[in-house]
Length: 127
Image (cartoon, rainbow, N blue to C red; front, side, top):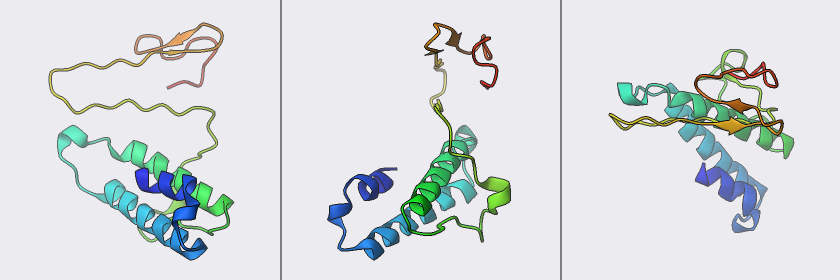
């Protein structure tokens, strides 16, 4: 994630567009390895936020004129590429035993989304 934000927010640190594209491709390769890798059980769902980030980076790169960077040979776009035109994406994960973490999101209407209210009336598409 840090590599992507550096490319995105500090373009002056690269000699030219090709250097930025090279860094983007390296970032895509690392994220692809995370999605395709084998992880211990406690990290079994780490691929979901990484897949979202990978989709976002590839969409951003295409929008900025770098062409398609999607790793089609390892992750077929029809099966794996996510729609990144979300208004808000929130992912909460943890990997510490004997702990509990809850996420509460309060909508502008005052409705709250959390573990026991997964789809309040204002947000039927949640979860």
